[in-house]
Image (cartoon, rainbow, N blue to C red):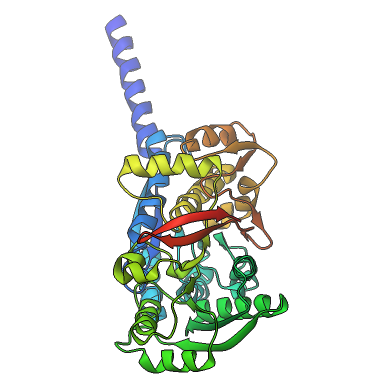
Amino acid sequence: MKRMLFATAIAALASTAMVTTTSAETIKLGVILGYTGPIESLTPDMAAGAELAIKEVSKSGALLGGAKVIPVRGDTTCIDSAAAIAATERLVTSDKINAIVGGDCSGVTTAMLQNVALANGIVMVSPSATSPALSTIKDNGLFFRTAPSDARQGQVLTAVLQDKGVKSAALTYTNNDYGKGLANSIKTNFEKAGGKITISAAHEDGKGDYTAEVGALAAAGGEVLIVAGYLNQGGKGIIQAALDTGAFETFVLPDGMIGDSLPKDIGSDLNGSYGTVPGTDSPGATKFGEMAKAAGFKAGPFTSESYDAAALIMLAMQAAGSSQSKMFKDKVMGVANAPGTKIYPGELAKALKILKDGGDVDYVGASAVELIGAGESAGNYREILVSGGKNTTARFR
């Protein structure tokens, strides 16, 4: 009789274990970035940042009763909206992703949101789409971003130009949503501060020769040339053509131009140029830098924001008790802001436990996250100076 009871108890325990194991959910997060195209040198590390947060949470076993989280990559190309839409649709319909870290460039991000995310009710958190137009776009509460709007970058870049005594500048921008929004912000803020934009001219990516564009910029004049483009395509081509013709010596580089590849490709002629990119000297940034190094990648442009984008999605899921976007979308702002226990990189398991126990968290993360308005970063910037063939930190703003 005892043997029978013992066997029954063991069977019951085994059955319970099986139920527990099989009930644990597999959550899929789309990491949809431009792995090819004009920022392809940045996106491998951006994806690594997002996937570092995903691995941290999945390994903890603390999300929604032990859910496993896996990343699924998709390529936006940064500039081809049709390709970005197709990639996003595939991940949503075939891979059944629960939410999206992405997109990256503003135009494709807008296309992904309007054509796929809205129709399917999928939350998107972009680490790098900065167009001011995204602040007011219809999103049904599904779209957030951990990078600040270029409305803010125009203000910061103007302050940098003023500090350097620049009174006039020529401006060229990539001919898309990102470039147009950023150029308008720079021009508006710089001229409001008393500066003069001698010319504001679009350029197309993917061309082999930018001599004509540089000729027009040179004819207009200016102490510096502001290049609101992409470091792996048109922006780089503009700078090289300007140097080859002697049109400009100093270049002002907004965030799409910041990355290790540009000074490496251009060489010492880029020394003395300067610019801005989202960044902070917060304790979270330092910790994330250490984690990134240990994981085998560099904490470069938009990597902190990528880690934070993934983290916010998973913390919001825990706060809502659900991995469904329609259930957790209203929790994103809450976990990102005060009140609550401050949470830094490497502390996601701690945050998940607090939320499970009914507490509040204030996710500071790697980029000093504070979401404002409809759900975008308030904005911290790192001022860059190209020196010795490298991007160096001048200060934080």
